[in-house]
Image (cartoon, rainbow, N blue to C red; front, side, top):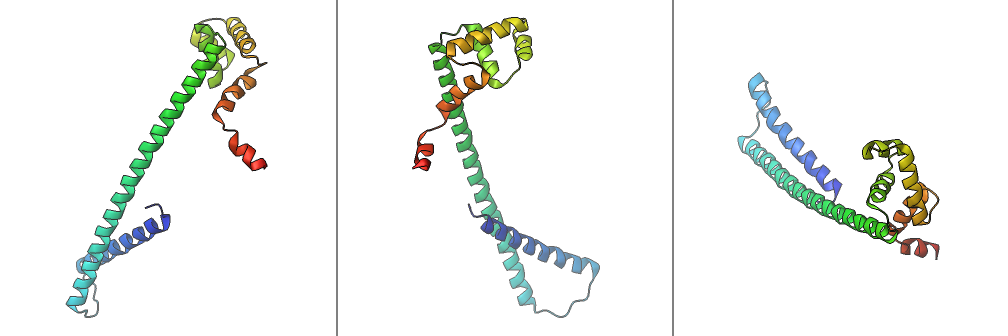
Amino acid sequence: MNNRYVLGAVLVVQLACAAFFVSDILISILGLPIGPIDWAFVELIQIGAALGLVIGVVVSWLALRQSRRRTVAAEEALRRARSAFRDVLAERFEDWSLTAAERDVALFAIKGFSTQDIAGFRGVSEGTIKAQTNAIYRKAGVSGRPQLLSLFIDDLIEDEPAQSSLA
């Protein structure tokens, strides 16, 4: 069910089958005159249209099932990535000997919150947050937030693809 053209073709078949049944009903309701058509031929068309709709339902069900499996797999991969990132954060914070308050501030800074926002979250003055961020930067050996972020991004990005593309 990976091929979007297959799914598109199944959709077209379903639309054609549904159009057949709707047009048949409209012809009957409106009493539109149509030329004589052999009843056996009409029944064959109805059977084909019904089969087309059933096949469409089966293919749609398979595509939905596959989509759900992919969603579960993607959510699991995201959960593992989050867990790995939390582990990297905890390891780095431990290596830098950050206090509990500095850990909170560092986490908010990594998430992109402003000094004012962090002060509001923590219920302290902006000066306190600035002092804590400076202590974090000093302990991490960086000069500011962009470099702090790059430390974590570097841990998440593999060097191998970049090296192989340079070769």
